[in-house]
Length: 191
Image (tube, rainbow, N blue to C red):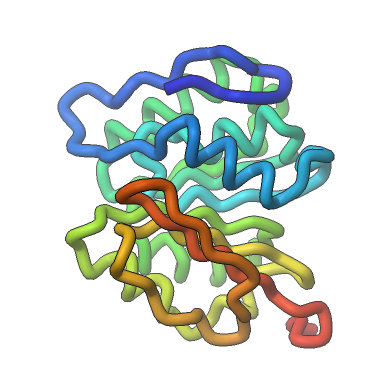
């Protein structure tokens, strides 16, 4: 795996040693970010929930995001994301967040801290209930900016339910991997 575009284009994203992760392929990752917009993510805040190797959050930073929150229950994954963000110059101001917590605990902590994101990237283990539980979390409106995107990677043929306050904007399949991309309507924005 590698970062496909932006200031860290071509840099490798290895799998964390000893961690059981299923990384998003470069093909799927590039398709996802092309759907979000080829103009980059300047000024955005991105959430990489179930970050694994850090692949998606690092891509967002490389494409111009100001901040990425890397969350995973496996501390080795979070530490790798921190190490790569620093090594590749993607977090020069130290503004990225690194949480070694499970998905729901990460979401609750970010909400308590008043964090707001333009992009939420969820790539949970396919056979786990953690992804559907996080997708069903009732407080997405308090965590997402107006016009925010939520991208959920899942196994083809096992479509997820729509999160509260978001509508399905696009679906795409790439072999055994599918993306469900939700959009938060500006008129549904939290105060």
